[in-house]
Image 1 (cartoon, rainbow, N blue to C red):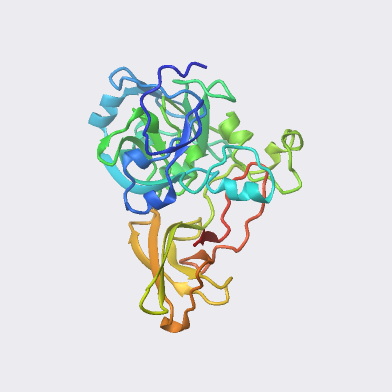
Image 2: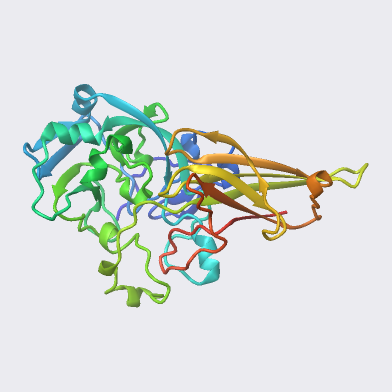
Length: 374
């Protein structure tokens, strides 16, 4: 693959792999901004990044539709109503380095920066599909919307593809977009421009970048990244060889689990007294059972939990930013000179983030208590 023609990437990201370019910011930098600036949006690629001219790029829609069509980006912007949604994009491998510390996993050793909370602008996928008309599904068959990008090469297949159920695509409340803007700016090549899919609440692997093809099918996308990757395999399947014939037995991932991350911990002591202060900041993300309701912190291994203050949450698809300041002597808090803080999120249904996360060979969906040390 040729990586010599890539656009200039952000210098604020920590590079995890150069070819393909995969890089993330620190969580401490991220939580300073409710809406993630473009220079801090992580880059996840399976092949070279390319720049495309939106005046010549076309999006085709075919398959089980009443009318097969092709639209230029300009036609999409002109012929359909635009919509904006704030939604958190996150990689399935977020915190993979922590799962890899338990036992070796396969994949980019992501830390906790592969998440971005952005304002996405585009047209609703629902509007586009209703314009084409969707054929009736065969009896006892669920239809799927398959997204593909043939515009650039990728490592494990001849194109990048993914799919979501048609029901999700047509759900007005699901806010699925064909996006051409991010944070009120034209979508850049690094983040999928000129067109990418935005599926709020789903992992980033389904948010296909450089989108050029949509096909309505009676099956999921056959692409490698839908069928033989981004699945949670049981712990006993612990090597690539063991996984080779097992992928088809397990469902493709959709939503990621309820999670929280401690982004920074600052400890300070007063020279004139015995008191000390601990300031903890972080973010949380919802799972499939409702938004984050509250976040709690413990510095004594879970014996005592302290409620954090939520400083940002917008709508049902955004992340949640929180912080807490603990002062020794207040509310019987004792803050040692060194220690470990843990965080857990609780959602609207009362589900709590678990203390531990099950291991899997791909290192995906890690959501044990957040951890920070001082």
